Length: 334
Image (cartoon, rainbow, N blue to C red; front, top):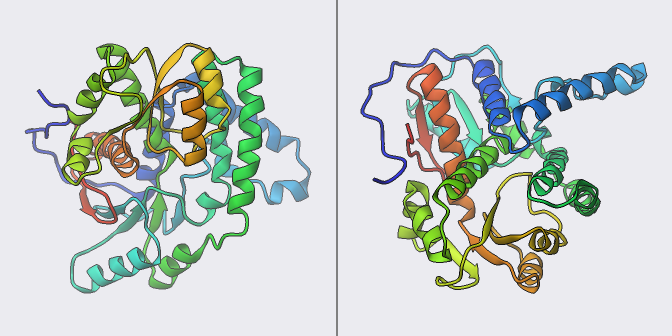
């Protein structure tokens, strides 16, 4: 039986405030965090302790959402937190054109209460690289000593921070404000869900060959759907008959990690990496490290993560009207 079949149990209509939706997503992301919920909650406490030691001037610029939300790349970008949301326009990338689309839909009578992006925009994009600290803890769980994991992750975090620093982060948010359209995004919480979901699946199913990994991915509707458009899971390094060995799912932590991680993972006994995407530089290093690599797919993996979050949302709040656009396709796994 394929995973992800739709539930036949009817759901009640939602009565959900934006702030409740947001808080649920953060909590759901924490519960699916590969570091473990206890460790993440401890990190939140440390942020409050850090804040208490700051001067008044430093406190002025401190992001106090970090007391309850460990994911800088997930925020309510604009809108009254107390509004009720039932109709959500969802896409992987929601920029100025998609905000204008939401406005057009509203003018045509197809109500949009909220625009929800996966990828960060506005203030969630400015410092999204901070979530990359998650990567060193995940590497450590797979056998890379924490001192080495942190040592190879920190330069990559600085590199990404320099890359995003000069960008015009607020373009889409400014448009949402002018049109009075509530706007938020959900990045690492949904990435945590897909990483956790796939890692548990591989740990339980224990596929012996790379071909079996592909077969398992294709049982998931998001990857099956992508494959129908010629963009399904692909063996990037290796071949179908090669043995999988220990499988590492690399799908969370903001963006691609350090190129040095491949050698360290190979030394720690990892045989195959399953990831969303791989740059040319990362590809060469993975190949050099003799690792098998399967690219599950970027947009399809983002879809899976969002859909797992939305399953949780609907289980708690009732039926939501998710309007699909910008690469998003709703599949239920209830």
